[in-house]
Amino acid sequence: MLAARPYAQKMGELLQGLGASVQRDLHPLWANRGERRIHLVVIAADRGLCGSFNANIMRKALEVIKEKERNGLQVDLTLVGKKARDYFRKRPYTLRKTWMNIFEKLEFGHAAEIAREIEQAFLEGQFDVCDLIFTEFRSAASQRVVVERLLPIGAMDSATSTSYLYEPSEEEIFERLLPRYVEVQLFRALLESNASELGARMMAMDAATRNAQEMIYKLTRVYNKTRQAAITKELMDIIGGAEALK
Image (tube, rainbow, N blue to C red):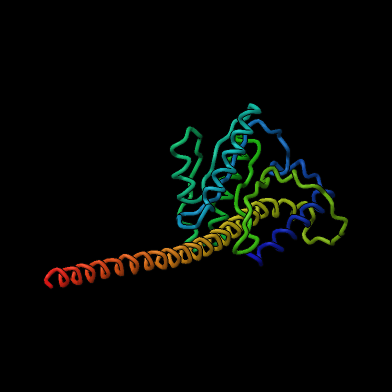
């Protein structure tokens, strides 16, 4: 995950520079078509026992969906993770596709496959905007749910002034980098989400262990007090019986 961050950032900077010097409107992945139909890619986990990790993602996704619908926009979903599937299949939202069991052995090929599906649907005009909803990793104890624009790529601001010599031409590199950019950004989001899930699960299991130890300690004290009271009562009965015999 840490290795993917600078790679994705540098690719974005390179595209910004290329976008400022080529006819970027000629590529459909760059062109802005407005925001009438929204597609959300919600990345959750395949398993539970990770605290509020999945709940936070679902809560954020619902907030975004309701906000878009209040503005009169159409929303459909691509879901990554069993927990996202289980949550949204019980609700009246349009599900385009669901991807599961990819975090067991996460590879770049998973992101590339998902990206191709999204790119193809975008090029066919099935939606105008695609946003990613995933959990950004900060530390094992801190994760943050974020919403990032994936398509169109032209939403990026051109803010770089670095000049390069390109081989082959700038236009050809631009054409090749645009699809790869979508794959890289999606792969980074999957890595961030996977790392966040593992961190959240580690913290949840640590808290569960501490709570279990505290519960065992309290129950042991209750048991010892109850056992001591029972022994004292038996002794009192024995002493009382002996006194009665006298």
